[in-house]
Length: 169
Image 1 (tube, rainbow, N blue to C red):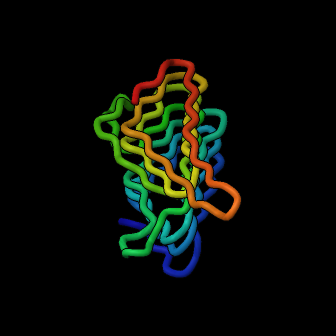
Image 2 (cartoon, rainbow, N blue to C red):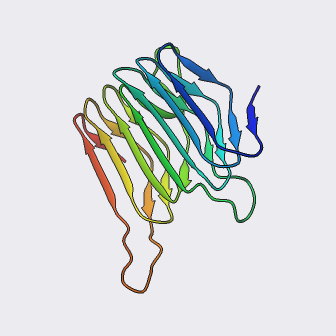
C-alpha cells in the first residue's frame, strides 16, 4: 500500500537495486534517489512541499500523478526529477514505452533525462520556470504554461528546453 508520513518529509536514498513504491503521501517534501538502478512509484503527494527524484550512473524513472495536496490552498511548490535513463511522468508498458502521461502543476518544474525519452503531459508553473533537458534522447510533453509571481521590481517566467533527439510539444 501507500506510505503515509503524517508529520514530516519523506527521504529515500538507495545505493543500487530498483526502487518500487506504490505511492507516497508526505506532510512536506518527497525525495527519492537511486544510484545505478530504476525508480518506479505510484502517485506522490507532497503537501505544500516539493518532489525530487534522481537516478545516477544508470536507471529510468517512472512516477505517477504528482500533487501538492487536494485542499483549496494546497500547492506543489516544485518538481525536480532527473533520470540517468528515461523519465516518464505517467505509465509505461513492459518495454518501458509510455502508455499514458500525466499533467503536472507546480511552482517550478525541472525535468531531465540522459538516455531515453522524457515524457509528461501538460506542464504548468505558477511561480517561474519550466526547464526540460535530455542529453541522450527526445522530449515529448503536452502544453507548456508558465507565469511568475511579481514583486515590486520584476516578474520572470520562462520555458527552456534542450534535447539531443528532438522536441515534441
